[in-house]
Image (cartoon, rainbow, N blue to C red; front, side, top):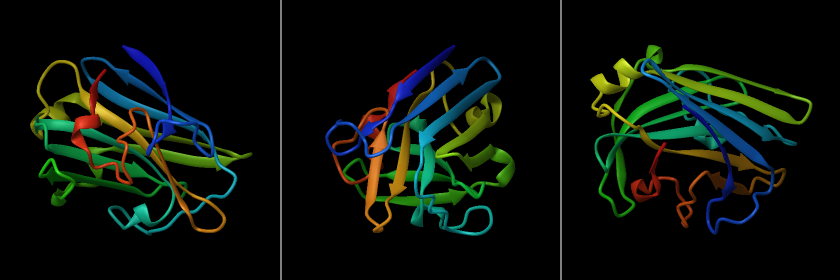
Length: 175
């Protein structure tokens, strides 16, 4: 199964500052997210796996695990630095990191060239199921965090949350 999602401004579903799309592929072995986004001002922060890369531009996915408010969050930035954790969310906007996952959990790549960023986050279905993802159709959302030249943050999503955060599990959807 494969499907492409055009990213929309997260706060109101409008046209984002820079266009982007995420193509999602899923079969019995792999769940993969491929981003292709315009990028005129790359802001990559954080050094080393599971560093605070969200302080810069990131390409991100959240995948529901064993209950609606427990999910895997994975991101990659233009320096090809990745972040992968399990989040517990109270469903009202407050969340905490349950645990950081080893780098082998996600295969990642990211490169910026010619005003475009191409990023991939790829997971083995068996590994996701061992973390609590039920068998069947994955439930997820894809996001982009983009800082402009003045440092202002712009958020976009396949299914916008309507808020200034991505951590709204009610915005996740089935493939």
